[in-house]
Length: 203
Image (cartoon, rainbow, N blue to C red; front, side, top):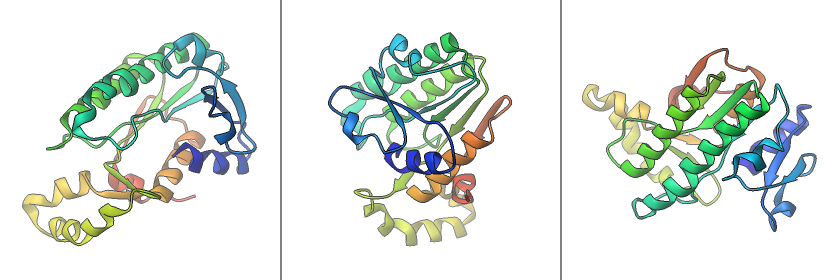
């Protein structure tokens, strides 16, 4: 997701600094400034921030599944905890956090970790935008497109309509647009961006 949104932000004139661990600096898109560091260490993140910045948190366990519950705690939750601490220290003005749609009947450990992350963001006192996608369709993540007809039917039926809308599929292009909109239109308090709103995002 970062690789997709960074070039768009750069093209639109934003000065983007990317925290990268050793060995991954070559993967940072052109036009962004690389800051070497550790996304699990607040002091490291704070070195990449300046007062008034927007911090966009995109750290997470790849290909989430129920068997990765420990990683949701040690990576996903630990990284947003460090990011919130760093944002406070650096006096950032806005946090953009990619959470997950909730409540949900599956992936309970993942949802719990992201909900805990949301609580940390809320408690920071820093204005924040929380995006809640369910499944993002993009390179390497296209299998869920086969579920589109089932979602369409579920949205037509009153008992399943709300769940189908809340836990709907979004595209990477829609997520990029929603992230850019969040950066360019900072929240003044706390803003929740759900699946229907992500789907409607345009650049």
